[in-house]
Image 1 (cartoon, each protein chain N blue to C red):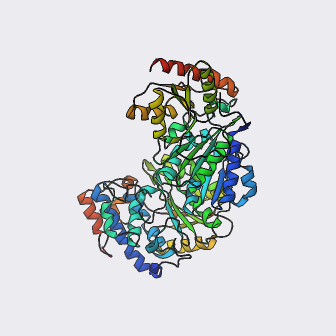
Image 2: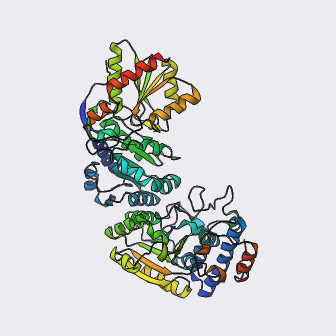
Image 3: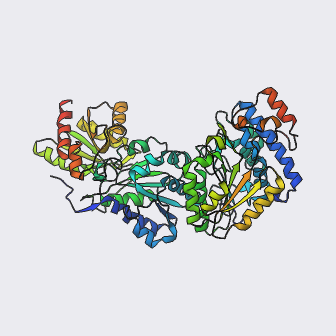
Length: 293
Length: 317
């Protein structure tokens, strides 16, 4: 069991400049991990870097040194779009859940860092397997309900892809969270407008996304996921809206591939690894701030 | 003569409902979820006794499985309830990723399994669920024989760590397992000792197997009847011990002949002790509307079908 009511992590005093430096290192980790095994998903990982860094280094009330599956007395996070595992693994390692050097084992045989995140190999920080899309919101709701039953005032966060919203289970879950007044839950959508086959608007348009979430009974806010100041504002705003009888959704505008100029502007880098020359070009744009693994 | 006389007639789903209420009284972490079938699953008593620990999810089984998986993270022991078809095939990927692969302590409780669902017809009569569930690594599969055993099994899975598929049914069915008979997950029960043939059965067909053994006795055939209430993990020792004495096997299940109890036992026999075996199972077809008794007769799962299978296998010894 973890200590009850974990304080915000020590790193939560981090300044926006500190967080920006961490973002640069996390982006380097993403490129290096995916390049090393010539597989994985850099695009969404790069696009969600500011969000994940802000969450793990500033916002979450968690205690990486005392990881437990039940997470009692801590905020929880669930990654529903498991394919952006590189960014998650990087922030988990860099915030102290496991040794940073373990990032070198990503997608290799006998690794805890599977292609898609899982509990199966016991990687600290991961409480659910994800990869098959559309399942994480239901899981986050269940975890939030358990916190309520246990009298634990901490929050549950989740992240979802926008293409992932095409899975019907997401809307089953959205309906039920409002019906059961799960107001200790903040679900964020990575609204980058891209998916494997192309633009979301071409593959299967989502329509008026804010209106959809509102119609399902959620308290909805928007933020720019690639602007650290706005991410911190948005997450703060979201937290202030919890406990009011409604689940909270953040629709987060991001750019797939953010931080590497040639990886932005299309869906191409959703699940493609850079070759040696491309990796070098990408890393040249991303200063090494905390030391490569 | 059948050493297990009929004590009563009750539906196995009511055994689940009784067991669930009791499990809830014993452990405050037991929670229950239902997808708009609370009455059918006999979960009303639990919902009334523990309204804060009961989650109505509406007609949304995929979401139910995910919420159940999430609840385990906070130390809860969730029981999901819906029909067997919607408990397995409809939500296979949710169970596979969020429950089985993730190793979550969810109890998937499925009523209206098999042909004896009756009049609703083949859309609801799943005959593939045992196979689907036993293929998942780490999943236990329990198919109790009557009301009393379903109650016992519900209590047993509540204190068993790990995902479980519990399969039971709709119709009123003979109650013959004494309420105080010991029940242990993974331990098959030899109900009748015999020397000529081993009849392995699960669920509703255990009663039919007892009837068949009685009929065979009149013909001078001494059949052993084994209640294999746990199909996974299978009681391999009990299977081998029985066929070592009898030399042949008949398997009886309300399931497709592919993937169920028969195949589980055939695998053990093929690997450890090749033995003639006959299947009493649905012959790779879908069911249809009808009464439970009519359907068991038409699809070859009735007492005379078990007797005939025994006669066939005896000739192969």
